[in-house]
Length: 217
Image (cartoon, rainbow, N blue to C red; front, top):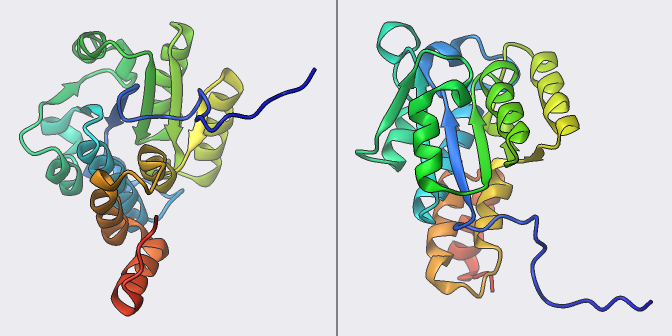
């Protein structure tokens, strides 16, 4: 049987309209004990994800645990991306066991869930395994997560992958939402986020645009 290729995206690729992003516990107290990733890199990656989601109008939920009594405020970079947005505070370590969060998930009504947060082995594993068990598709942005050790983070990622979760990175998330440089309406948005939060890739864009007036696409 002959297989024919077509110029269409694969069904497993994300688009801005097909998923809900849940950013979990990117808070000061949780970051203090995070050692699997540098704190600056973590904040940068979380900012990239938040600004990408906000820019592409992805359905997004930001949630905290014990914000006022223990864990502290959400990173400013995330609040900047979602000014005035509702932040749902919880008592449960597993976001999926919080009725208020689940009410928001159900109100949005999308089958794909993208997760990022602290710590990977507790506050990401919990909702990932719970959502998978209920028939949702789950993606985890691994470098916008962190844990108390590299072993804790890596073991958690492996556990979720074995259960069916799909790993990705923060820059991959941004570029997957854009996916085609012919989409000129979001070109400046994408390259602007990359220049600010995209590390060496962002520096390359700044250099090419400044020195050669280069443009992708």
